[in-house]
Length: 344
Image (cartoon, rainbow, N blue to C red; front, top):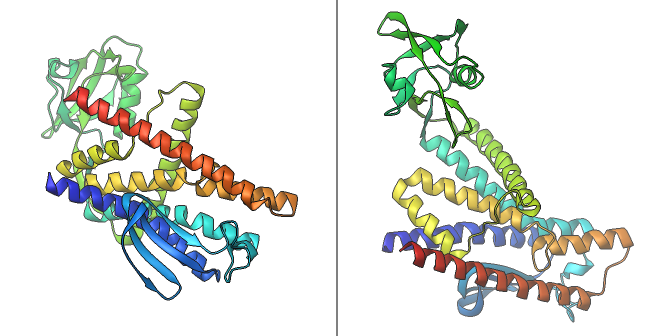
């Protein structure tokens, strides 16, 4: 329990701290004055001041913020004013938090590739597992068998095999098998598996352990982040259109997922943290008031109009958006607690 709690804290640190550091460093690089850097929200628990910036840890560890001079009404004349900087610099500062989350996710995905992981060997059609009671078991197929032909069609990879079974119209397929140097034929009758939505015979490929070098791992990490971002956007669009059930998790749900991933090993924990980092980075870019994306939207409108919007009205919109977000977080947290209570 204590170990899981420590890993939960570590996840929130890896998600929130880099995000705020991104804002902080970019603001400094753009010549802006940072009044406060806070990890957490609410009343301050502990802190210190160094130079012009106060660094603090607050009560609620589910967020954080960087207070830059000039972002609130009444600070327009302050030194290092956010509003006095160019539109490009302000966009960079607001986008730097999500950008840092994406960099963290790339590094974490790359770390899993460097640590190594088990995956399926899809380059060859070698059976790694036979499902009990399946057509494959009934035809005496065994782990280690290499399938070289299906219905007189040559098989070079597991994808070739899967497509041959899926697209087959015959009730019985003729498999040519290589087993310990011997080649022979067996007949297998595929059946339709509703959960998979296609014909199968009940076999799985061989699991192999793979490990990549640093450069390849970083490239694959970036690729994973791109694929994951696309998948999240498609899932959200599915929720909007009603094709996918609406599913969200708050801090309690995330803590549960983290606890389960820790039990599964280091790679699972790192992968979950990378996934959450991408989610946080992308979510903050949505054009919702109080989020970075909401503030970016106001900057886009400023660029179109050629002059800034009224700061007090903008802050009122963000304040209302913040209250709505907090209410949604509390609602999702309540649902997470209720779901766990019913499960127990």
